[in-house]
Length: 265
Image (tube, rainbow, N blue to C red; front, side):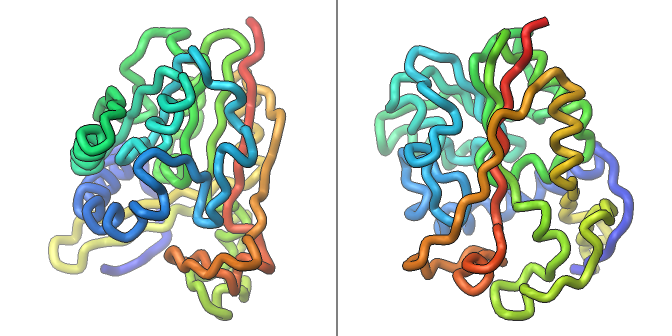
C-alpha cells in the first residue's frame, strides 16, 4: 500500500472503506471482540464504558440507531437496558458477525447495510442516534451526514458519537514514543488515502475534522452540543490498539466523545 494525502469524495471514500472493512472484519472481531464484549458498550480504546459516562442517558423504551454498528455489541447493550436498537453498517462482513453474535447471545439487533449519508429511515424515527468510535471519520460529506442524522431524530432527540481525538491528526499513528512527536498541521484537512500498489485502487480513506469543524457541523444541522468528553487513559490499562497505547494515552487524549441534542423547530 502507498499512503498519500489527497482529496477523496464521498463515493470514492465509501467504496474504498466498504471493501476495507469487509476484508478486515474477521481480524477486527478476533482481535478486539473480547475487549468489546458481545453485549458491551465502550466508547474507545481507553475502555471507557457508556455505563461510566452516560452519554446517551436513559435508553429504556427509546428507539435508538447505531451508525457503524459493526457486530452490534453496543446496540445489544442498548437492548439489554430496555432500548429498541437498530444497527447500520456499510460492511456486509461486519453485519454477518452481528448475526453470529445475535445467535450466540439470544439478543438480536435488527441491522441494515447502508451508508450514514443516506439513512433508509423515515423522518423523526429515533430518539437517539449514536456512533461508537471511528466510523464517522470515514465519511467525506460531513454536511450530508449531519443533515441525515438531524432528519431521523425526533424533537429534542440526542446524537452522541466518538471519534479519534482530532488532535491525534498531528502525530504519527504509532503507539510508541515516536507517536508523541507532532509532524503535521492540525488544520490540514487533506484526507489520508491508501492506494493498492498492484491494482491502483483506493483501498482506504480517512477524513480529518477539527473540534471546531465538528461543532460547526452540529450547530448547522440544528443540534446543540451539551457535552464534550475526553476519556483519560486508565493507569493500569496496558492494551495496545493500533496507535493507542499507555505510552501515548497517559500524555495526550486519544478519543473524543461529542453529545448533542436536537433543537425544537
